[in-house]
Length: 287
Length: 353
Image (spheres, each protein chain N blue to C red):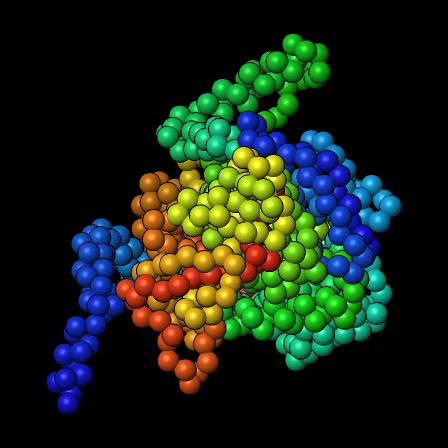
């Protein structure tokens, strides 16, 4: 009898399919394990290489490091909020745009993806500098007397990062909006809702899974940003990834760098888990 | 409240979806728009609901011209084809939605929701989410949501299409009872002629952007105005012939067929309709004025009746439907040649063939 059950299980097409999918995913999993997970674990283990938690104590007690972590979080929150405010209208427009509008919108949205982040960052330096395109134009028009401080400060860093992160916010929200049955909007309007109330009561809540996904992506990626704050911040803005790099490159303090990396990873995972939980509570299928 | 649609035209580019539609639905009446897909019935519904603005013509609810009014100010309850329940709101919140939008005070809202849910027999389901309900229950929620604010007009857009046959029949009767009890002026859209015959006070048959005929189910069935209506509603034998003197027509293969009414000017083309149940077969046929002889090509047993496909010798193929009693054997067998007959009053003349 047990062998009959086993036969049936082996013949079950759903199980066979599942086994095949696992097999197909295996090469990628192995590759990730060797070139990503293993080195990561090695690095993390270096933070406790001397058998104590001294490195973490140093990170927690020194005001400088706490400040940098705090500032990184602050920047990540600001970028997330700005991206959300800019991205939602764009996503909403894309979701109802015709074919041409959609292709055009997506092209401009994805254009940054096809450009090196370094090139984009230098482009912003050209635009934002004291004698950059923006300041010169504004002065030529007589709108300002002295150049605006746009570069080598928080403003410059925020502009640069928001530019890079915007597509990560637009696309999940766009996808969520697209999944909402257009009849729901019609139903809301037919039942007496003005457009803004239909949006607040129906469209917005149903798009929340996309909003949370976008926020999680933007926040988590921003937290580990390096090149953009390093170049646009001009030494005035320090994010945790820059601090880690400094520890390795300048002080060759691998153990402390590993401890900071662990803190960054832990913070990321905690925030991600919190957002995932929030999203889970909101995860309604649109249909 | 009564609905009046006058001269409504709606074009989409080169396509004309509505080519001058006139329609009146009396207060408390259930009128069905029956037509195949692409006939313009959905566009007409959208024009009435306010989701489409007509290029020409007007829509009145009572005496108010609502042609240009946005959907939210029309006070029209609508049940969508896929119900369009808000998936993130509970059943009670869904039903309360139109009341919330009208800023009704909370206690009254709660009471009206409870009444509406009781009306559709879902009293204990208020706290559930739509996806936790069966198709029939979702449909009843959609109905409750559409009537809870006492709309001036109820619109039903093919609401029974997604239900299985048994459930569909019980829902149809339930909707009919509710509509009569509340005296709701109702416009019902369907492509299912059987459904239209069961539910309607009157039926408007649409084809190619125009209304072909408006009438009671019995009128539309027995006296279709056009060939399209005859063909679309019920099963039919359509005979093309040439009109002769004295309410007759010469049909090839059948000879002179005697109709119950004038067939038009002699020599003109005439189209005659014979419903399958009007045909008599065997001994019964002998006494009837219109007679022929036909071979039985096929018999289809349907429980209550048997459907026959007949080949008139030297003439058209025809459909007949004979009533059956459970104890009686089939009165005919395939391949047999039988006498065929029908009464003059059962021959309907289609004027605008």
